[in-house]
Amino acid sequence: MDYLIQNLATDADVLARYGLTAEEYRDAMPAAIEAARGSMSASNAGRRQFLLDILEALLKAGLVESVTKPQYGDDTVYRLTVPRFGSVAIIQKGCPDGAHSSIRWSVPDWARETYLWWLCDSMKAEPGEHIAKGIQRMRSRVLDPADRTVDGVIFHNHLCGTPKRRCPKQDRAVQIGGLLVPPPCVYIMPDSSKPNVRDLNWAGTQQRFFPGILLGLFGIDQQALPAYLGHVGFQRKNGEVRTTVSARFGIGRSTTYRR
Image (tube, rainbow, N blue to C red; front, side, top):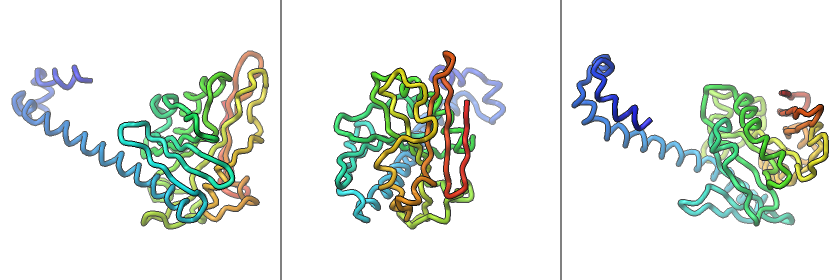
C-alpha cells in the first residue's frame, strides 16, 4: 500500500482522470493522510464511548460494582467487577471478519469470564455474515484445549436499532448515552478444555454468568434470558469439524447457521 501511494505520483494518466498533476498530488497527499488518520481516530473514539456508556450504565444500575478502563497504549480490555462472581474482561474489537478482531487477543489471568465485543460499523454484509466469518477465523483457537479462549462473543454498536441496522429486539431498547439502544447479540462459546469430546456446545447447553448481567440492563430477567442468548458450537465427526451459530431474538424468534 505504501508503494502504491508513493508511486501513484508517477502515473500521469491516472492523476489526469482526477484533474491532478504530479506536483499537486504530492502537495495534497500529506494533508489527505492526516485527514484520514483523524477520521479513523474519531471513529475509534466514538466506538469506545458507545461501549463505555453501556458499561457505565451497568455500573449505575448496580449490576456491576466497578468498571476499570484500559490504560492508553494497552489492549482495549475493560475489567468489570460483578457482585458475587468476580472479574469479567471485555475485549473491545472491530469487525469480526478481520484477523485482528477475531484471533489476535489474549484472555487476562484475572478474568473469570472473558468476552470479545465486536463494535462493527461495516455495512458490507449483514451482521450474521460478519459473525459467521469471525467464528470461522476463531475456530482453531477455540478448538485448541491448550489455548484459554473466550467465554462468549458480543456483536453490538451504535448502528444497532437504527434504520441502517434494524434490530428484532428493538422492543427491549433502553436509553443509553442519548441513544435508544437495543440489547446486544450475545453468543455463548463452548468449553474446549476437553479435547476428546465430540459435541462442543452443539445444542447450546453451555452456561455462562455475565450474559444474564448484561441483558438484565435491558429488562431481560433470568426466565426470559434463554430466548435472547445465542450460542456457538462445534461437532467433530468423521475427521471433520462442523460449526453451528445460533442467534435468538426473543420467544419464537431465532436463526441458525451451520457449516
